[in-house]
Image (cartoon, rainbow, N blue to C red; front, side, top):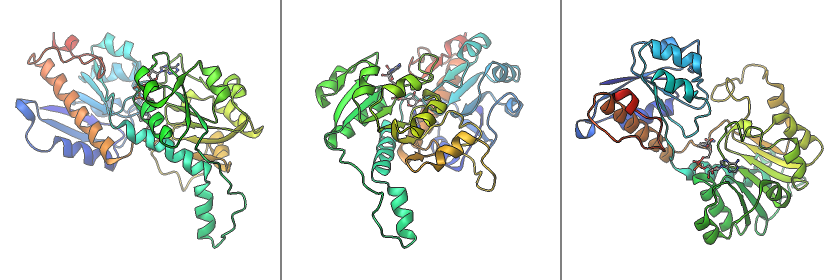
Length: 352
Ligand code: NAI
């Protein structure tokens, strides 16, 4: 039996994890007992995991060195991320403390790619404004002019799993595709006609720029004032990657001076403590976010791109697999489980 403290639990997480864990464990694998917690993980909440062998965390849980030291001190040996990105985990500290870290590298890239497309369509055809106007009995079309996607140039920054699916969808609309990625996907290029070019060139040529690259020290603020200055005037910017890929102050300036025509954000630089919670009865303290929400050409969703039934099932089943592989390795039952895509700090170190 492996006991797992699940931080930042929402009803949809609980349902998916319980469903995945239901029924007998396959092939003699360990049973998994979840303890669901609403609190986000961080230095002040790490003690809630006492008595558990693993923690299961999401994008806004803070798994820094301080938190990891507390977790390790309380006997936690494994961090199971129920997401793909791992910018919130101090892997150096985890390695030092002998805490394994696994993630879910792929779970329906369609969910995120389709949400990016939903943001483009909703912004372009002003669906939110149109819908609230009609509900109010106002059937005027003033201010609702959009543009044909057909023939427009779409820049895909990061053509990995999600970026590739996004590129194929946009190709279906008849868009011209540009890509920027240090690891070009030649098969994708051949299939869709996507042309790789350096980021500055992509920014200068694209009508729509969509971010699908991971957040790390090299990509933080990859869209800064200089990058925004290179974009085509009036271009649309979509971010379903991670909030800190964009410098929010530079973005606001770009919106104010008209350099950026429209922005769709599923992620926000300072989303931690705001997204995933109901703040509807409070004054929004984040003035930058409040300002963005006031803009008619900005559409913000609260990190929901992953939120499809298929993606949740994929997240839950791979998380279970990771937990069971860890436990098997810790008991010395299995070897060679260190899938480099899933294991950021592999269990072999623990098993020895
Ligand atoms: P992936 O690893 O398959 O693809 C990422 C691609 O970005 C790779 O091809 C990599 O070479 C490329 N890349 C790295 N540095 C780059 C740079 N400086 N410029 C251009 N490209 C660069 O990852 P996947 O699954 O496609 O996910 C991408 C990101 O989407 C994740 O890292 C995560 O942050 C985000 N994400 C957001 C979700 C949401 O709900 N909003 C859900 C899942 C992932």
